[in-house]
Image (cartoon, rainbow, N blue to C red):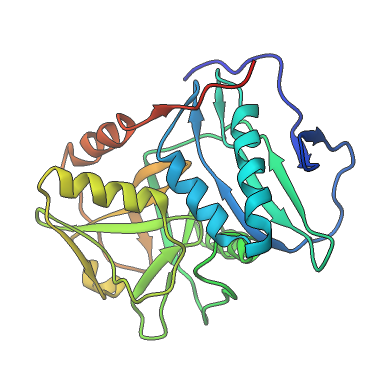
Length: 269
């Protein structure tokens, strides 16, 4: 793991129309998040930044997109080119008190495996296709899953079909066939899932989108996908199916995904 630089940027910065400025005061209370995005940067290299940029801008209200483009570019320029970082961009607030913010966060610990649990109860998401408005709800779901011995909560449709994790996309293997949830299931457009699917297709791996329940994955290899963790294998499903692993496959695909990292755009002098 690379060392993080000793001089760190301000952890919270707001966009003032021409530049980012540090924010000293800590927020109190819950603030509505209209749109959000985050990505992992390792020594100035990032995976699919253009997809994160597009997803964030498309989630903004139309009247905010021009400002959002300038803000996003400034946020990228502010990221240190050494160390491991997990920056997050937000449009938050309500009514006429909206504000673009950058949170410059050191990257938390990452693992190659995870235990999951199916969320009990109805789907609590208000805007399931947008990253941001339901982040606080997803944190609550993951906390509930942690109380059951899991690290991620899995959401299902009213019919019981797998949709996504609270903080991750999903994929599974049927032999040599790589599978994802069906297109008609409402979920956040996972940048990591899209990148993995594109990579698989380029390598000649057949890809399938399907409706599937957790019980139907008994004996299969299941992955969670996220910008922070990349690909993680599900080693246990609490009160769920018994899962499998093909030796070497996870590490191979983690290396393949990692090889797609590209340098951040050059920061202005």
